[in-house]
Amino acid sequence: MIKAILIFNNHGKPQLSKVYQPYSEDTQQQIIRETFHLVFKRDENVCNFLEGGLLIGGSDNKLIYRHYATLYFVFCVDSSESELGILDLIQVFVETLDKCFENVCELDLIFHVDKVHNILAEMVMGGMVLETNMNEIVTQIDAQNKLEKSEAGLAGAPARAVSAVKNMNLPEIPRNINIGDISIKVPNLPSFK
Image (cartoon, rainbow, N blue to C red; front, side, top):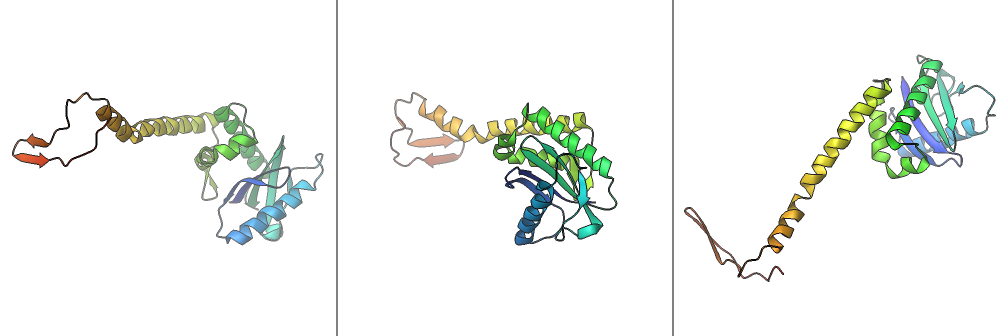
């Protein structure tokens, strides 16, 4: 089971942290610091697996990571997970980010954190791997983006309605509106213009 997914830069600043175990906020911050120090001090020529830190569970858990440019992608997993499988999952995650952001960089993770979390949620939920097919993940993310764009159009409807009323050329503001048996008296309002 995946216990945590961490992305931090070369200075140890976390750009994403997703913890699937109930830890307090302080403990999570300590886990991030400890994990960074364990991973950062390793030479580039050694393997990408190491025992987990004391806070994440010690020798019963593993840290599996990849270092791309200025970012470390670290998965904290228990002993039941395959190291090579998790390395492949990291590769799929990075390639998916790259495809969604067209040459992903650290700023994409900062300014589009919600989209990054959506991509991650398509792949891993509750510490269990859901999807590893990059094309399927991208298809789902594209569908979410289309839905967000259509909802953005609805969110702007009230503003467009006010703008349309302001642009109407009414000779005067109506004082009484009659619709069938209903009569509405409009109070004195300031001019729309």
